[in-house]
Length: 462
Image (cartoon, rainbow, N blue to C red):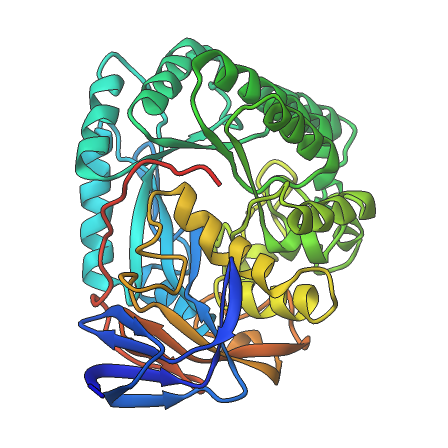
């Protein structure tokens, strides 16, 4: 019998993918899975007895690059260094970073600039989603060039005040994106509705952040989803609705999919665990995100949608602020700072609240945290599964580990967590990126810059 010598062998773990599970040994050479089962030895071996072996998490929605607003630069608390460390500690091995352009910067130049930052600083592999803010006569050529270079996504904000002024150009851009295999990520809130609601509240003297959900009413999300679905139907372009937060908006997306449209839905953790009552407390500003938290019915609809396949991914929209920034007493509903740190807690909390509590099967858990995002963003089967030929992105998962969350001890520079003090059951023991252990038993390993910017194919239907 021939025994193969490999770089790494992971033995005796319950290997879980989106299609099934089995106790199987995994052999890795040069960062790639080359053998499943059979005789093999490795220069390094990990005994995963009693543990799960999962595909590395794929979080395709994070903010680790500064936002350029006119001549000003707005940095987040986390960059590629701290953000990718948080990802590794949480079992996420591939991240999709939202990149904002500088004034006059073309989309390809934006991707190359942000990609250079990631190549220098990221611990894990990454892609860049360029934000399209100023569509013009050169946008179609930009999109074609992005596709040629393997950057097959673009981000659009319907919540920006002048979106409607530029609507014809945005429609043309979505049409070009669809024709060249790009997936358009869309922030669905209607800017006009938000501006009207906010102005009315301020006129009534309701500036405090407890009124934030009223300044971004559910109607703004539902209306925006309805509009982008219609635009996608007219152009035939696939769309990915980011951080969907309401039952009504999900109903609109489901109806479009029932008609055969390529409409995909992402939600994020805060909508699964918290509701709008949080805004009444002193720590209410910590929970400000766009769209805002909604009611218990919306929360239940999103859990049901995750389980049934109507919600395709759970990604973080990781946009970290410090505690001081979020709790600034000068903030109002018009100046609030939406965003929070979630990369390190995404997978552990979803496992604890989803799988352990019977809301999600193991296979569905893997799909919504890894496989589906890899497929939609042109990375499958390189990422998002455990198969011969795939990158050896693996998480050795301890299903019974109890880990209280202490934000100050996390890898994010935000210094706090929305889940402060939660006793989460289930956690990564080791995180492996392309065959290298980048996290083990509480310690991040590896140097910034080992992560690679990935070339992608066209979006793949689920």
